Image 1 (cartoon, one colour):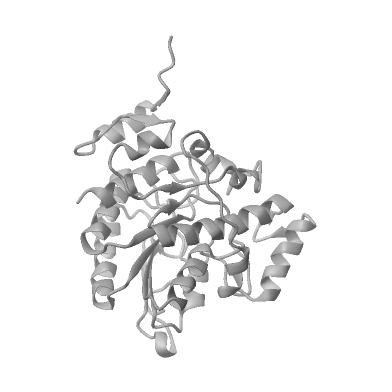
Image 2 (image 1 turned 135 degrees about the vertical axis):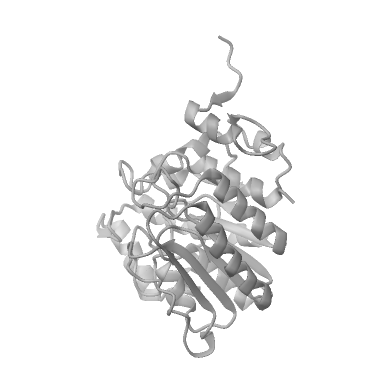
Length: 321
């Protein structure tokens, strides 16, 4: 049989995609050109060095994003010089040394390749923030605090990119839709009135933070919003609280919107008990696009094989309008 250059979807995924209104294709393209053919202006930023970090892991492993290797033209940017925008020099050195000496940190067995991946993850997130793109990176970042690596996260990618924007005089709205609370991002901006941080996550799940009474401190009081959802929550609950976050953000009037796009709230995720669907991620993108012009995103969690579909439907939602 002659090759068509496409990968056929599974029956399950095909059924999911066909259920969407105005679906543009039912095959998964192997090239970036076909992803762009639908009219996207949000590019996907990816580098294969992310696959060299934490190889063989069945948790936060390369399997999560390896499908992008055959689909996306690679780009790279070393963000090491920007890490100390939100992390201390001692934290940077600790992570570098742990990688050099093959130590365990943030529940991950590190290697020198892990440090390269972490620096590129920060760099591509900065690039995404500047260009309005989606950085598909590993390791994720939103659990990393200013002085602590945690929850698979070494450097807080979205916080680094956001602080760079703040230093340039911009206000930023961060919407974290990962199923785990973005405790690191919250800690970094908890006293800031230049960043509005809103997190939607499963209540009582790791890391055990993110209750609704956590709203900021000092100048940042009222600039943190948490929406803990009970296990079993689906698209209806997700979209309801995303609408509330957007309503607050419209009053904040951000110059840029950054999305911590974790997909572990997905119905087939192995770690959490939320029930978001591909259409739910499409609708989140749609809601954001209806209210804001300057949007970027970075991959956080998601422990299943459908991350490419989640990313694609989120981007489709952004272009729906």
